[in-house]
Image (tube, rainbow, N blue to C red; front, side):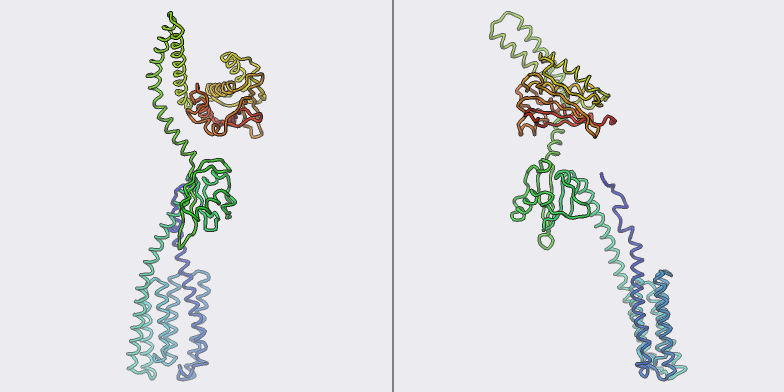
Length: 541
C-alpha cells in the first residue's frame, strides 16, 4: 500500500485537541479582558459626567476616579500578561475576577452604596468567568463577591449613613451572584459535554476520511469525483493509469480536458441516468473499462463519482483462476492421458505394419496424426507450470540464435537463408536458457509458418537503445494478424491455426514475464507480423 494505516494518520484530532483547547481559553480570556478594558474606560468617565448621581461628595468622586484608574491599569497589565501567555490561564482568570470583585466593591462603596447598583457589574464578570473556566471555582468567586459586598455595606453602616434595611438589598444581590454562578456552572457542564461529543465526532470523521482516502488511493479501479460543472475534484492513481492522464496535485481540471469521451458520457448521463454502466475502450490507453456514474446529492445535484472498472484486470484474474485449475490437472493429465495415448499410438503403428488396403492405411494414419496432436497439447499444457522453475544466466543473443536457427531449419526442412539475422554485438540478456529457447522456438516457427519462405522472409533484429534494455524483434512477410485477433493473441487456447493448441504465445508471454521481460505484437511496416520482446536490465536478477 502507498500509505500505512498509522495512529498518526488516523488520529490527528486527538493529537491536536489539547493545544487547540488551551489556545481557545487564551482567546476567550482576551475577549473578557477587552470587555474589562471598555468597562474601565466607561468608569473613568462616570465621575465627570454622572458624579452627583453616584457620589455624595467631591472626595468620594475623586476616590471613585482613582479606583477606576487603578482598575484600568490592572486591566492593561493583564493584557500584557495575556500577550506573553503568562501565567497560566487559571491564574490569569482568577487574577482578573478578583480584580473585578475588589474594584466593584470599592466603586460601590465610593459611588453611593448598594443603592447605586454598581454591584450588578459583577454579574457579567461572574457569568463570563464561569463560561471561560468551564464552571470550575465559579461558586468560590460568587462567595468572594458576596463577602466583599457584605463587608462593604457593613463598613458603610458603621462609618457612614448606611442603613440596616439595605442589607436585604445586598442579600438579594449576593443571591443573584450565586444564581448566575450556578447557571454558568450548569451551562459549562453542557458545553464541556458538547465539546467532548464534537471531539469524538471529529475523530470519527477524521478516521473515516483517512480510511476512505486510503481505500480510494489503493483501489486498482479508477475513481473520479466530478462536481456539477464537470470539474474533477479528486482522482486516484488507478484513474491516471487507465486514462493515461496525470492530474495536477494542487489544481482542478475539467473532465473534458482529461477525457472528452467521459465528459460526453457524463453530460448524457445527467440527462438520462439510465445511460450508466457502459463498457468501452478508453482512447488514450485502449483499456477496456466499465464506466459507472454514482450521483452525489446534497440539497440537490452536487456531482458524481465516476468509477472506471478495469475489465482487463478482471479478465486476467479469471484467466489466472482458470489456469490455476488447469495446473492442478496437469499431473493427472500426464498420467491418465499420456499413458493410454502411448498405448493407442503403439497399437496403431503395429496394425499399420500389417497388410491392409488403402482405406485401412488412411484410417491408421488418422489415428497416428491425432495421437501426436493430443500428445503435443498435453506437452503444451504441462509447460504452463514451468515458469516458476527459473535459472537465469547471461546469454549472448548471437550465439544462442545461431544455434536455435540451425535446429529450426533442420526440423522444418528450409534453407538457412530464409532467416535474416541482424544482432548488435553488445546484445546480451539475462534469461533462463530453457525458457529463452522455448520462447524463440515458438516465435520463429510461427513466423516461418505464415511467411512466404523466401530469402529473408523472417527477420530477427536485436539492438540496445539508450535506456540499456535489449529489444529483440521477429518479423515475417506474411499477411499479418487482423485487429480483432491481435487483441486475443496472448490468451490461452486462442489460435487461428486449426492444428494449433493456442498455448504457444500464452506460454511465451508467461515465460517472458517470469524472466522480467515483456512481449507484445505490432504490425510490421511491410504488412507482416512483428513480435517484440523487451528484456529487463542485465543487472536485474
